Length: 199
Image (tube, rainbow, N blue to C red; front, side):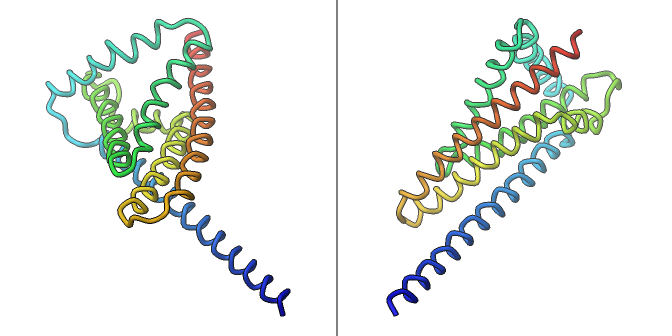
């Protein structure tokens, strides 16, 4: 009897763990899709020309110029990784993190929007979006941000419910480690692509 009881408890525990894993995977997929949608909305939302020029100029004077001025694979990789890690860490903050992440995705789309709008017809909005999405680094970054954002949502729910945070803190730590590794791979791929394109 004791053996069958222990077996039932173990089976029930396995089901609970399986349910938690499936729920997390579903949430990650949902966040991934909605972050991608936010990026696309940013690309196609109408922007006043003056604001588009401001965004394009800001991007070209800061991120693009600083990045292109760097020499060597390591420097380019670290530059990308540092900027993405700032976003990742901020997105892990309970309650405000997910809001920040969706705003960041929308803003990234608006920068692409601005670059298309100020290109004098050389590229369309659809072309800049497709170009961005054909880069493997884009998908890796979205996955990394989705993992941490989904954990931030779950952590926020636990805080609002005043539930135990022990498990959620563990999952968040694991999510940050996995996502950081994905961002390192993404930064390396993007740096290699830039170096290859400049030759």
